[in-house]
Image (tube, rainbow, N blue to C red; front, side):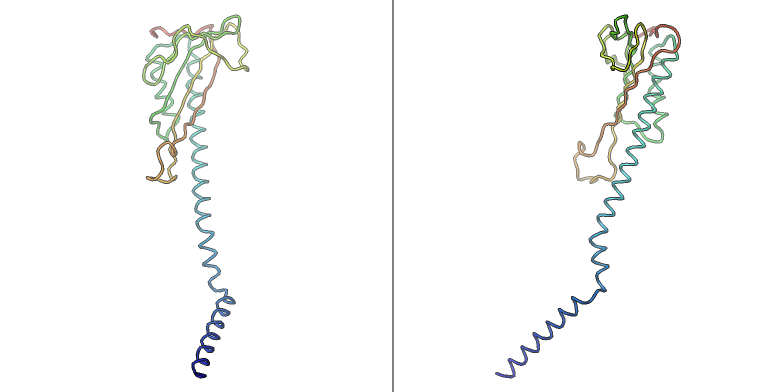
Length: 198
């Protein structure tokens, strides 16, 4: 009996010594810290990549919308062929990023003597008329033009997050609409007429 008790006491002291040894040993600390910190660093890297890519595309969307409005305000007359060609201009500015399922609306707005905006013509990326001619338009408060002609360019480009749970998240969670609207005043003449807009 005494031998069995001594045997169990020896086992317990060996286990206690082994636990003390593991507790004092610092060799595996780096591996444990790495296992805890590595996923956080990977998530931070992926997040910064997504944010920088999103900012690059947003900058391109802004530049493309601005370019479309700028080109149109340098004209005295336009036609549907010119307006339909603006989607190629926007795609060129957006390069190397692809524009799929985008929305581009161009609107010619005649501002009356009272400062009210009236749609003169409009065109979208599909050749449609998004705004009816003669309908009123609310202009931003910082546009104080009277008896002027303004071109509004609206561009919306959906941006799909590349690394956000691919294959797991629903499309609504992975897609962000990046949009920009510009109002440019006509540079030459009093009005930009569209010769064959309906």
